[in-house]
Length: 355
Image 1: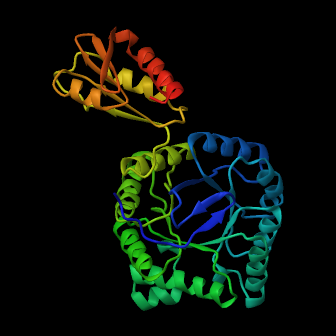
Image 2 (image 1 turned 90 degrees about the vertical axis):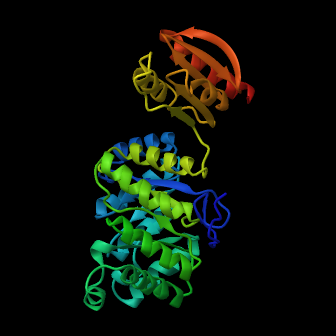
């Protein structure tokens, strides 16, 4: 069991973050926010994939004006991502967003900061303070010479202290970096020195393959240490894939049990069925199953029977056939071309019967 860091609990709409709440998965739309139809379409796709919280960029007046309609129609809490402009932050709060991502120290005078924090406090809306190694303050870069964990921590705490000065503590913190080791060190530092909930991520992690690996290593390392309350996998790809990867990171650590988990062997020269085809078809056809089910698909008689019998639903393959298991018991023998449909039917039975 992972001994999670004890952080204070906040709410992003109906989704709790921190405390004893489950770790939530976030993503960000990649549409122009002012294109309400396209943005809502993507939000619904993300929600269907298991996204708990969605962030939208608010870089201009048109995007800010689109927020009321988006917030009203969104099936999950909406976070407004704002940089420098306090007017957009105020408009986002008025629109009913569930959280605002903004760094108070970057929006101008203390009066502007006060306006934003006062409005957020009145409506019970949290703020995420997001520090990035690529946009550290000039004086911190001069002080430390280059981005360091201490520099990220000091930058984040500057913004936290501004909030606290105005009596605002409904805060989530992130200290992201493209450097995985730096990101890990920065989060460890802030986790040891504050009890604010933490949003984990490797920023700008890259395309799907490398970005998935970097995110799994960075986010996974911290989660395994009990650090982190909500996550986002940042990929240069379809945001639905961000959610799928995020969910898989949580599942691999036993921190989430939503959807189907497919266990499959890496294959070798003993393989006697087209396991790649079988697994790919199952992954596609079971994608929208919401209840947790462990499905094992093994390609030979060496490890197959044992592994298949330990899953909720399993199939051990060999010589063009598969032996189907349910809860460790043999159900029946099926031909190779029948394996996918047989597994789908067993998953449906498992979900309807609860076993």
